[in-house]
Length: 460
Image (cartoon, rainbow, N blue to C red; front, side, top):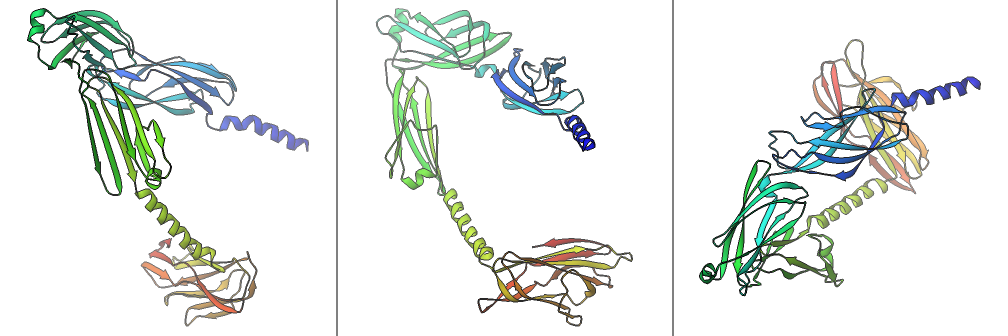
């Protein structure tokens, strides 16, 4: 007993060292945006928990990015440690959009874990948006704005705004998601020449040696002009698209709605999600949105009728499988495998599995072979009651099979002829009595491929 306890204690000390590194990594959030051409490092907070023995770890990547920390750090057994993971943008990196950044956490014994972060890379010109308010007829003033659409800070930004009526230059810092307004006065001469309509507003933005040119519009006179279009297309995947555009110069609230019935509503995806739903059998989905001048809203409702069709197919298949297997008194499964022989002759082992799902009587099992195969006189545990070498037929008989009882019948077949090709074995037939009625079950189709001394089995 003492020796057994010593062995168990030794196993508990040794086993943790032979399993792979077990460290849980949790991303606590941080920067994920890279503006191409800017060297601002990304800072991501990682929480690492070591589930194994105390060890030292380091973080690295094979994508060419410089990261920190560069030195190893220690995490005790069961300890959780927060790591500030810093990723420095790579020069000449042409990828745009979403990018999966893979990195590795490596232990001292070279065991490592692959982790990933999703980064978003955009160009400098895609960061900003410019626009304007309406022109005040009383003061001849117009307020233009520059908006930082991203979670990215820019310092010492030179902004040059221009339009047919004014030019404005400012040096400033722009915080993440900040919108900065500039108010300018038009001279009387320019104001008198204005006619209702849109005027181009341009902004030349420079920061950290990078330059971007973006455009917006100035609209004269207050106008709540909202355009609304609705389109439907598709048969099995029915898509309804509502597009609302604020073509005016004021912020407008737009109400949109789509009606469905209870069935189509179950298989409809909305983008964005509706703000409200009314009704049960014939629900109406509504959206209420506030659009700035020049903003566009697109609502997409996609009804996929392939889903109910797929459900119906699965139900039909399930019913067929139930009728095929659950409704049978005796299930028969046939397997074939090759046997290696000294002289390279073809020899196969045939296994027949009988499983009685219900009590049956006077069970007769009949199996046949192709003409070129011979029946070996040695059988498994269950001896056949009849072997007909001439007709290549083997028969077994059982007085009864209890519900849940399984019998395995095995025998060997061989051929001294050199055969090649794909050969099918006939299905095994089982005849039995159930409550005075004679019934029959058959096995699956089985075949094998023979090629000289090599063979492989296949089954259907």
